[in-house]
Length: 81
Image 1 (spheres, rainbow, N blue to C red):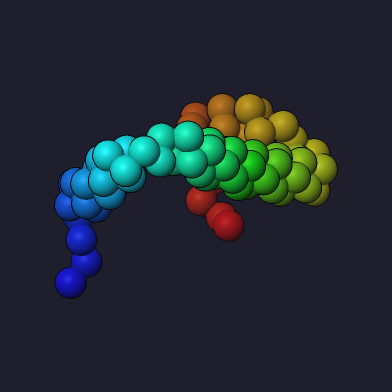
Image 2 (image 1 turned 45 degrees about the vertical axis):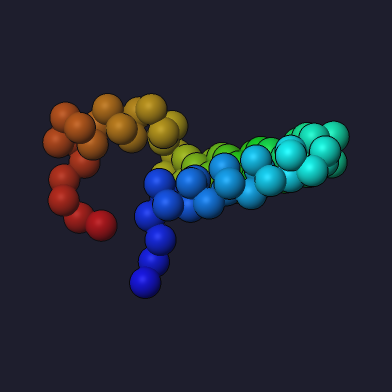
């Protein structure tokens, strides 16, 4: 059975409370900072990959993403893949 986000948050809060009660505040802060930094680095990497893919499509089709979106939304590009 898969846990809900709410259940996971509740368990995480319990673990954090235990660590804080044991005096591990500094270690907890360091660990959380590293986890946050790692997650941000993953997001930045994903964003960079998306930019690279968009640039390839823009070069291939000789059209900016903005121009593509406007033409697509107005129905000027048709339905062909």
